[in-house]
Length: 583
Image 1 (cartoon, rainbow, N blue to C red):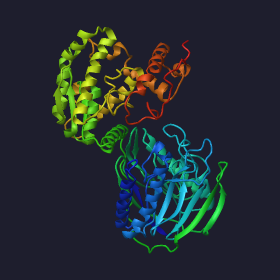
Image 2 (cartoon, rainbow, N blue to C red):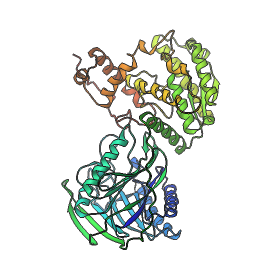
Image 3 (cartoon, rainbow, N blue to C red):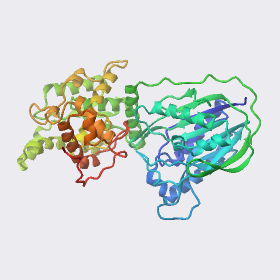
């Protein structure tokens, strides 16, 4: 059987940095050539970064993508890399007349084959996802071509990301047309347990297509999304051959024995078994197999356990948001509680403790242990810290305006937010908020107070998971970074004497499963009760969640780790009189 050495470039492109991403393509292609690869594949929309959102509707952006693609093909040849075929995702446009309902300019989520200084062939994603974080009917038109190119005697087909997730389409066409290898550029964002789903999907599609399958995913953070890499190769029976690491860049090089090509060059329309047809374009780059060689042992990276996986996603999300947006440091309020302790630890792991600044802002209600716990965390991690007591500042406000109850409590949070934003303006720090998903869900936060900031590392982390992640992090090699008392003490906002979270909320081990069912699974009241949740608690929590929508709309972005986060995933009206029936 013919042999092929394929290189999957699991890389971290930057949205909008087309020139920088092209430079990265050349660099990683050179690495692949040095490893003796016969083919290198880059992720979906690599050249523009993904998702580029409404940028794809600008003709200038599309033109820059198309022009850079051709220039990069020529540059590869000029630098002695033209004999190594490159499959790369980029942004193109379809030659379609404008019509109502069609995205402006008819953009295509495209892939191209670069070889010997030329763009040899182009194709585009056929299935456009329009669920969860995906909104691709807004941005793209559907592709209807599938290239199959002959490389060293092997027929190689190309599909793009969602084309694997949906029935019919390119996979069905490959099964009918025949190929030895299906390569799939992807921009598949992380959520918990998705790696297991992804492997099973690739194995199933390989069996359906009747050929080996190489799946290359991007890695890195882009606003709310985190791409986890996890690129992989399976054989025609669905067996795992090779797998890249999670949450880091890697060139996954794999040797494959593949069936000899059989198809004839030319074009043929094939039923896609989804109500459409796809034109198969067969072309030949090289028909002669390479001389037999000794294959490299395949690499299967060790997998993270569930908590490690989530923690790495949060760290990567913070690291890339800071770096890609040009910040050199971060700042946050450190209370001695578990949320700020975990947030500070994630930040230190992401960008280094020397770039993390924390402010201790005790009030008249702060306990002694809150201050000492915060100071102990600073000592353990080597963070930059300062103390800014807020009692006198709060008193100055109270001399001018009369506030009581919740308004007086919230004033303290707003003073803290003002101090952090002021220090951010003065020194250029990015302010990190420290609220968790349980608090955001129930409205247990203060607008322009603890919600003031630029990025929210744990906004998609339920409180019960905050504790588990903190315990996990402390159990890793080295000195535990989080004081034990921050983990074990009863949580409190400390905005009034002897305050506890349970004064306003049920215990988190009761609350969080209910929030998961209501927020992430969209269960209604009757479904929640049928699932075993207390009817009175269901009524209370639904009301809290629904009334807090206006707060969540003003909360900063943060890494998505669950199937449905507060952000791109969940879109509810603020002005809304619908309420689940209460009895």
